[in-house]
Amino acid sequence: MFAGLLLAMVAASLQAPASAGPTVVFVCEHGAAKSVIATAYFNKIAAERGLRARATYRGVNPQEDLSVSAMKGLEEDGLSVDKHKPLPIGQSDVDEATVIFAIGCTLPSNASASGKGSSWDDVPDDRGYGPTRDAIRRHVEELVDRLLKQQR
Figure 1 (cartoon, rainbow, N blue to C red):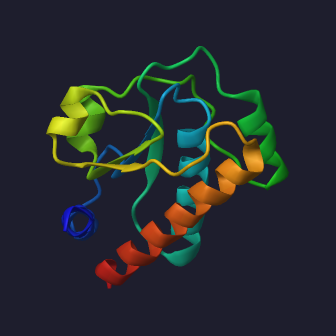
Figure 2: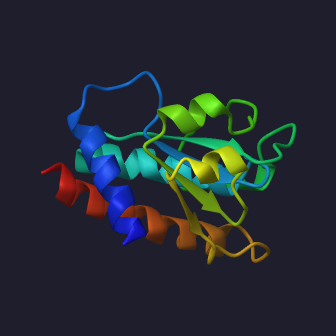
């Protein structure tokens, strides 16, 4: 039910004029690995499949720099990402987002209270880049497929 409501919100935003902000915000604890991987795969797959939504990454407690292993893994996968310093999820991110996905973390209260939040708690923490990427990619592909059905 909740996931259906979130997808309906995303679908409605896809029919509206493009906003200055992202429509999907991926959040992980440090804003440096899981959310970055999700953003890179979402933007690639969405663009390839003609989905107008785009994503960005944020952290609950951002670290100073992006994860070296995540960046290396993405590069080996042939993906690139906007390599900005990890940033905390702020109120403007919450306001501009259509949906916010927490990956292995708890969203701050403002994001939770927005009604836009959902979580992917099954993404592994400590098994290396490959298993983390594979779990995230499965979620991203399912999300893009559902959003494409609603976009049409």
